[in-house]
Amino acid sequence: MRYYCPLILKNSKFTSFNITENIKIRKIKQREIEEFFGLKKIDFNFSKERLPGFVGFNKFIPSKRKGRYPYGEIFKKGIFDGSSDILAANYVLEINSKDSPAAIIKDINLSLIVFHPCSTGLAYSFREKETDVSFHGLFSGPFLSYLEIKNKKDLIRIREIYEKILENKKNDIFQVISGLYERAISGIDVDIKMRFISLVVSLESLCLPGFNDELKFRLSLRIAKILSKYFKLEVEEQFKTVKKIYDIRSKIIHCGKSKELNWEMFAKTLLIANRLVNSY
Image 1 (cartoon, rainbow, N blue to C red):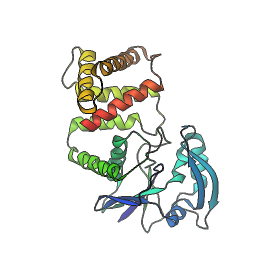
Image 2: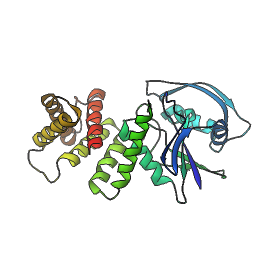
Image 3: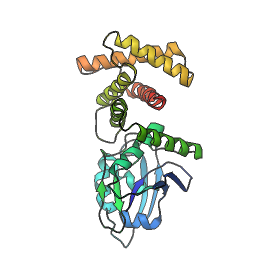
Image 4: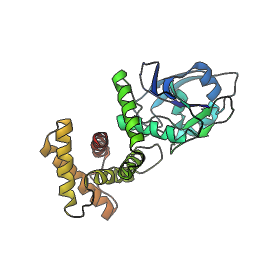
C-alpha cells in the first residue's frame, strides 16, 4: 500500500530522492494537490515571519474535485495557528508499506529536523485508492521556518541520519534525547520555557549520564569540549554560554521564569542541542 504525506521544502530544486527502496521524497504532482486539498492552483511565497505561519498566500483557485481534506476547512483553522501552511506543500513523502506509515513518518520527520532545526508540515497522510485522510504527530502550525535542501549532499546526509535513527531504535538514551529535542521544536502550542527546558534536559541526558554533583560545571565543560573537537568552536566561549544556559534552566525550575530567556538564547541552545545530537 502506498501512502502520500505532503511536506514543505523552501526553495529546494531536486525532483526526487530515495531514502530507502520503499521511501522517497519527490515533488508533488498537480493531480495530487487537487485530490488532497481540492486546489487547482495556489500562489504563495515563503516568509521569515512566524505569525500566523511561514507562508503567505496570494491566490486560491479551487478544482472541480472537493479534495479529501478541502482547503477551505484547513484555511479556517490555519488562519489562527499557521497550520494552513500545508496548502503550500510542494513535495510529498511517498511510502510503500504493508503496515501503518506512522512510525516511518515520525522517523523521517526526526531525520529532517536533526539535519537542521525546521518545520516540515508532515502531519497528514493520504492512502492510495482511498478517500480518507490520516493525522500524524503533534502539529498545529509551524514553530520554525521550513527546510531548504541545497544539494544532493544534503539529501545523502538526511538518508544517513535516517539510517542512524533506525539503528538506535533500542537505544534508550537516544530515544529520550530525540524525543525531548523533537518536542522542543514541534508545532504544538507550547511555552518557550518548556521548549527550553526540554532542550537542556536533552543536553544533560547526553553529557551527564549518572552524575549528580557539579552538574553545571561538568555540563559546560563537556559540551564546550565536544563543540571544540567536532565543530572547531572556541572552548572558553562555549563554556560560558552553556553555564549561562544552565543558570537560566535553574532559574526557571526553581522560580518559574527567567528574564534572560529570550528568542536569541533559545536559538543558541537549540543550535547546541542540534550539534550534539548530530555528533551523538
